Length: 200
Image (cartoon, rainbow, N blue to C red; front, side, top):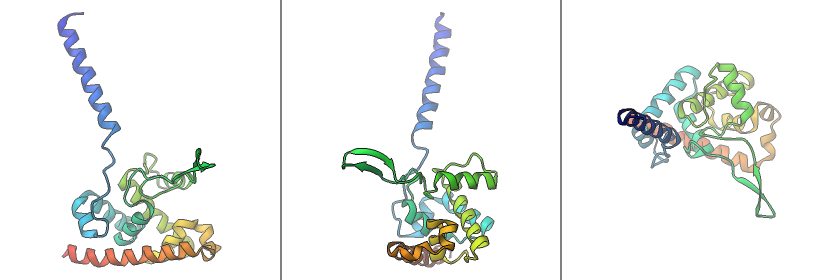
């Protein structure tokens, strides 16, 4: 092998390694620093803000409703998963559910979204895809259950318990979920007021 050929091969190998390293790390950004300030989130993640507005236009779900739901589901952690369960406190038994990503969508509901929207390449750890999923799901809740897209509390209950569970009012037996849904609604109101000021 000549020195010239070896030099070209080394460059190709180096380039391949760089591409692999870029693909493995850094593709999912960390959560914004201040999760209690919608204007700070908007400023730190301007691309996210555009994605949220795009979903608002497409599905009619307000930005503040989406933000509050993402906060509750994942705290803006793109690779969030449910905790591992352990038998006898030490033997790992798997996760409580397949929920993953910003929206904490489970496998079956995510597949339903990809099939219905044709967005077959959508990924749960991609912010744009995750918020589009949320907008789509909340639009479905509006069409199937007549829940207003601006009714954060009811939208969250349907998001958490599913359309069938919401229709059966399963949430009424879950005091903890009723409390959390009220907290999500309060956060949405806070984000809405903040967004009014930073938009000006």
